[in-house]
Length: 122
Image (cartoon, rainbow, N blue to C red; front, side):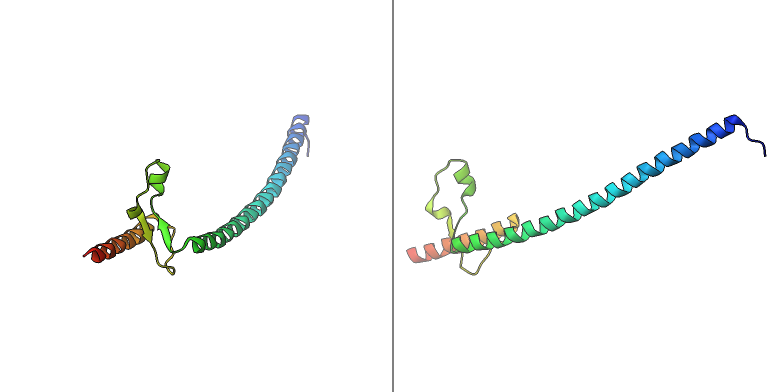
């Protein structure tokens, strides 16, 4: 079989490009493994952070259990806090972290406190 110099040149160029492609592919494979490892570390760190936060939050809530000031917005707005805006929540009750549910719980105990204070006046 007769080889033409032009054909040999093209075959050499193709082989060089194959090597370049293979090197790039191998680098990307290594980067993928590194990225997946880092993602696993981040996920593990996230879980540890979440668990630590939940422990801290439950300890903090237990320190302040019994009285809950629902006037956070008023305090941040610089308004004066009224005594009627402070709600007593029984010791065994914990807030859920869901804003809507927590507002319902707070509203319930606020209404209960209001009812009890009106009953005492009569």
